[in-house]
Image (cartoon, rainbow, N blue to C red):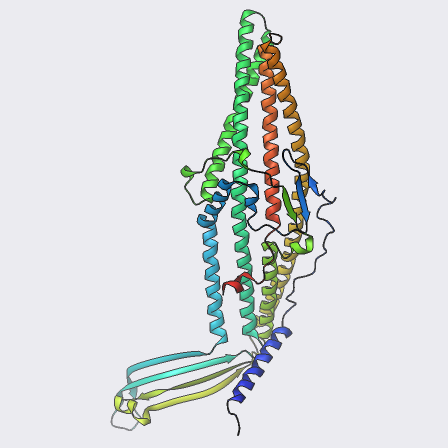
Length: 490
């Protein structure tokens, strides 16, 4: 007894196998190009330990897994709340999420349109006037036409052109999903960097304000001494200039702080007038452990590299689809319905209408358009490969620059702290002498000015160290995903 249900299955299996083999046959390689991996990121290998201005030494852990929510490493609940608010309410990130959802629906539309059969139902009624046959007494005829029909068609993707085009669009959606992750991490990084800069400016303004007050006090004292004849006019004018210069430094810093707060408010989805207050620099703890991925692992962790890799695969599939479009396509069609010139005929057995057919189409001449399209997508693929290489090199460079900055900024921070501590002791010593009557007041004020100036430099160096730590944590990316983002969302 013959099993009639087996033949369609065998035919479908054969067609599917031919389509899959066609996907392999057409197009350039889908795998990203191999890259020469550096033995270490920068010209000189970084030290495993970075000295810290206070607390434990910062440890660079080679090969450690990246930290997904790396901003928690700064130990500030206020900072974590700001990042969470930004990721929830940032409008640029919300727009990117909506664009990704639109891309998913576009992919579903294209796959549904190209992969599955089409089935449509139609119902029509019309009244027509037609010419009669010459020689008949009646010159024209008026008649009604009634028709109802179900039509189906299916274009078999014999050489995989449609499947490759669908896979190319899937690659583009995957790249866009990784770019969304790039946008998410950029929002978080900008919030953290803005918070660090604002905290640094706040500390600098406080220190400069104290420095300016000391300079004003010193200028007033020298003016009084000059009027009493115990100070030279040149010393008095020099003190006036230094006091004015100290006051001049404050407005640019205040303006910069307000601009940072306005930018932070927009990142949080707020209006500028509701900007959050700056954090205290003491609230931000320097992370004591920084993961550093080996270059081979970095390729699978950074979302910008993964987006470029998905773009290479999409470019290869698009080029393959353009090549497969040069080969024949087979379309099967069928229709069944009822029709007639009146309702009685329409509903009778004589009103049954149907059709079935198949058409094979082989492109012959399109004015060179198909070949040009093939070359276009091949060039686009080559551009995607070059962009992938550039993205990888830029990632290596960013990590190398950050490692160098961490090391050199740590040395600068150490020296600024050394200078600030020394001048602090000088100030305390002169204040002690002044209390005993062994030092004049202007000497005390001058020592205070020197210390505050050194402290401002130390604050800027400490903020740079915090920003470099954030940059390295962000540069490591996320733990390697088990599947592409778009596949996880389906």
